[in-house]
Length: 483
Image (cartoon, rainbow, N blue to C red; front, side, top):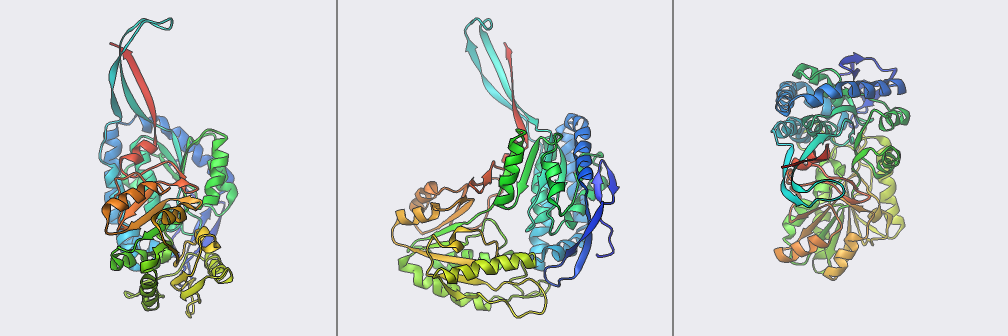
């Protein structure tokens, strides 16, 4: 993989970057490949290329656009044997996650948005009286979903190709063109993805890709007058900066940011099910998931048993080489991120919490590993309960009453995904509606991909997922006429 030459794609041409930077495998610390370092001018050129391609692409019938999406899914699947090891190496995902989630979900998302949906919404006729403005009459109307224009798509490092597919596919289906900015840490799979659009038959300039490790190149995209919309998944800090610069130019924003998911576990919950779901913070991509139930709010009647079960589980989860079949926890993305996670764990002890499991650095020769860590005797004002860790760390906070559980859960800057575990479905529904989160799971972490996805508060702005994704990448245009 190191020998592969990765390039930018601008206006249908493959272009060498102004420089390059190394992408390191988080498990082996070996170089996976060299990503092109785009200059500010190249970032601007990519935006201009997308603008030039917009008129023709937006006029292309949706049926033809969707046929190309379907064709891309076939091309992506045909390259699976090449893509799985590449994406696995740059993300550090376990091979199971790479094979089942990282790569195949790309074609699944393209096939979803290859389904043609009408962009017209019928409106009931209105009987309008004559006014000084115009004569009266029966006024008909439709809502027309028009493309936004040029979309800047910036994805997170945890699931780079999957996350980017969820942006590109609905944006293309609605007639937008794109400038794609992959995550700095693992851009190679996304660079390869954009190359494959040519093989699938997409016109030049419809999808452009610019990789860079510099803030200057990224801001050249988000501030470009050629860009009409910014779709970003990543940290809240970066999202706030994008909102600031994008808002000054009235750009459409779709921001899916951080999370600090609260999982309320009531005394009557099925503890086996609750523990199985909560432990995904450890067992799924080393906790590098914004929807993880990292903040467990446990009723006192089951608090000790819940903590005991989690404490007993943690030492048996294998941390190590993600290529080995029995590995459960691979590395986190970089050494810098590992130090951040370790710093947050240390803050928990310093502020009076107890480490019931983990907390130490695994004794491995290479790789950026963090042991599955359980923080107990915690309160909701501790740093570990306030900040998104994005690592394999679970914090447990006790509660007594239902109102207290809701108050603790809502006492957060974030509001992306919360959970309720109880055998009382009526209570679960009522509690869910009081949680200040864009998504709530009842007795499950499973997703419904047709549901609207997004957050409250500092967890983001806007919604995508299913048909909501088509709405996100379109402008509502009202067309009326006199009958």
